[in-house]
Image (cartoon, rainbow, N blue to C red; front, side):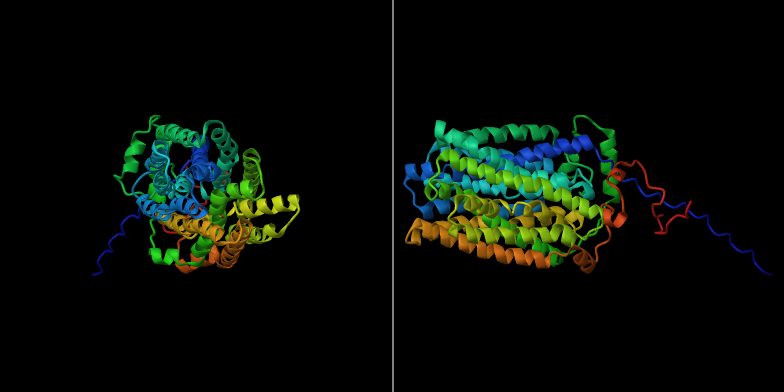
Length: 497
């Protein structure tokens, strides 16, 4: 006798893929404006010592080597703090991190106001460097939480443009304060500005819905719960993003030793060498070697920063356009980094030997401003080969190693100046050494940055936020539900309609 077959259990309906987070355009651009202001203050703080270098050196009677040591002390904890805070960012919200940094910036200006001495200057610069070390990477990390991947080029450029704006506006304003009210007044005004920004950020600087992979119960969750407007749509988006975001993790050794991350670090290292030299010694060079007045030197520094700003606002949006058209990340974001550093290196090696005023100034601008596009692009290339959950930590490592020149370049330049037969010869030696370092870094970046290759080698899953792999247009990020052609839970595609 044949037993009746047991009926198969009913199939459960396929789970519906959760909708992607809604792009809150107004809030995203408000956060962008605050982060640009954050970076503006950051770079004004960095440049104030160089702008005040001549009166400080005259008043305190310090040598070039001592001034170089004071300037380099800024980087003593800069890289270490960037590294540590990068890992801390996995559990502490960007709102708390950026607020704390700005408050410490204000405190760091106080020692020199209490007593003007070399130890006070060193103490203030060390504290300031520790608080500014994570600033660029963590503010970029905070910015990425408000934009999908295919809309990050312009916000990234604006974030980095805060550096150019900081110098563009800080140079004339700080110089005016120094010449009109004494160099201490510039430190006081910057301290007050940092306090004002920190209060504004604490009120509105909450985290966005993209890349939220935090562990429940962290301080980030608490800060979001206290959001004053109680926007339910953003709360839903954060929950959906957390549920659907990739949870993959890879050993940090593999992430940090792949060619794209190493090439990004090399590009940043070369660009940071020129930037450190610019902050510490360019104002002094213009005053003592080109015999410019304080106002004329400030105007030239502002012009160089304006050139950097033009590059920052034009190149990354072009990169976004190339990515949306399917160009590889290697040629759209990797190659421009290497080329920019190489061109800046050539200009750095050339301008000490050029006599004409106009060519000299053009080469100065290219040497100290042409590398600017590296800073937004090297974050974009590093981000392309890192799971979102580990992005903050890797950004911290990239920033920590890429900005090490700040610890070496200013002091080494001071030593070269004191050991040379003349100041002019010392500057020539310093610029040639800088050009050699930058040239090597540019070539390494050009050769090593290959995001598509390294994604395959690392075995990373295709991320939903990659516009080249999913084909979404920018406006798709505002959708409230899954697309009609979204894959089913079992990975199959729906039948054509």
